[in-house]
Amino acid sequence: MKKQKGMTLIELMVALVLGLIIVAAGFQTFLAGTINYNLQKTLAELQDNGNFGLNYITKDIRIANLDANLAILNDRNLYSGVVLTGLKSYEALTEEEQKTQSANLPFNLNDNDTTKVELLTASALGESNVKSEKSDQLVIQYKAVIAGAMDCEGNGISQAEINEGVFIVQRYFLRKDGDDLALACDAGRYKTMVPTASLPTKISDFGGQGQVIIRRVDYFHVLLGIKDNVRDEYKYMPISDYMGNGKLVKDGQARGRIMSIQIGILMRGVEAIPANQTVPTAFQVLDKKVELTTNATKQKYVREVVSQTVALRNGYGLMESL
Image (cartoon, rainbow, N blue to C red; front, top):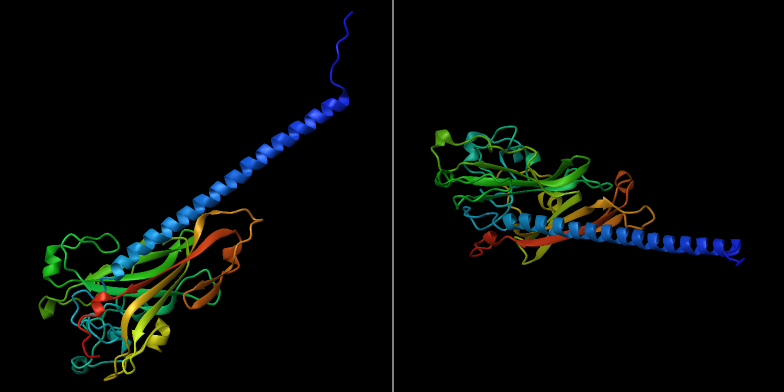
């Protein structure tokens, strides 16, 4: 009878171990590839979200002060492109005093809902996911001059509104978006070239939740580029440093001329990364060093700071006397 030889127990165990090693190596390669793919996808989404969103915002900021009375942006000039003040920025003004004073919004806009100071450009007004710092709020305005154009919420501008001297007001701020925060834009408008009796007392469709521009934003910060009224100096400063207590005094001097705006946004990716990965929790956003809150670090995400400097070309003009 012919003898047949099979595998010994040791050979079988070696074969099984080698098979397990090969399978484990293949699985590890697959897992590493999946993690790397998800990371690359998150980085790409982060770049797209930041770049497209930032471009959308800066496109509108560039037209701030369009067709305003003066090519000078400050805290007192009527229709100034960066909206810092209104009637409620004064402690009190009589009707007679209103004839000799000024603010960025016309004094006929005096209702308590859409012209309150909480809806103007200011530091530390909005929500954030960083410690000890709230997000800023930026409000711009420009005159509607092109029929068929749209504001940041997608509302169209008609020729009839252009004929009535409509100004578009746009507010950029952080708000809740599900479990996250998002940078949103709230747009309103008001008429200026209508009979006095028909002048509006409020900014229509203003003060709401607005439309989301950039999702998953942790912090929004704004700096103003200021030309000193006396010395020929130029510097960037927070809104709070420019405005002080935010009030206007009767017959006071205008603050420095605003020539540009810097915006900084701290944002995160859509996909969480493995817990064993190391990610930073502190970031430099323009002049601010910020640290994420404990709640924001419960899961690990890729985060990035995007920033942009925008020259306010409609505030240059012929460099009129300050």
